[in-house]
Amino acid sequence: MEREQIFIDPFKGPSALLFIKAFTLWSIYPEIIFLTAWAAMLVLLDRFIPGLSLELPPTILTVLGTVIGFVLSYRTSSAYERYTEGRKQWSTVVHVSRTLACLIWSHCTYVLRIPTPTQPATDDEVNAERHHREKIFHQSHRRFCCQSQALSKRRAWHIL
Image 1 (cartoon, one colour):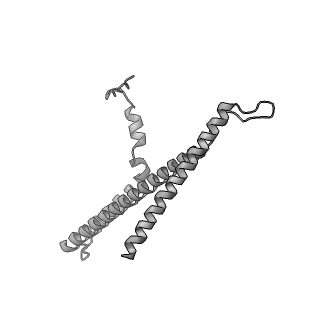
Image 2: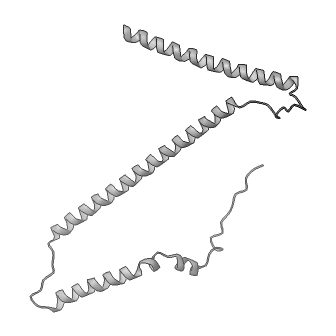
């Protein structure tokens, strides 16, 4: 069964009123009004009060722009590094939880029901349980042999 593609009609959607209500301007308009009034006051003081000069040399603006650019660049790169580190940690959590689930699943018994004194385990259930325990024993033995061989090879290599 194929997934249906969802087509979005650009002419049918949320109204402009919802867009205006969700606009960020509504949450920061007091700061904008304050800073606009402050800038207007400084311009009026500079223009209409003789002897008062609020001019800045152009080099200060250039240096200030460069510094702000470096700060923004640093903040962006550090945020990306934190994001990447978080993704790595989350993938580690997913990997470890999957490994734990596989480990638990491989050591679970395959008994479909719990035998009781009135209904003892059937021969098939006993054989399945025995086969499962033998499989776990052989897997553990194989891992132990591989690890001991790897350790002995490592030790022999260090002796030379």
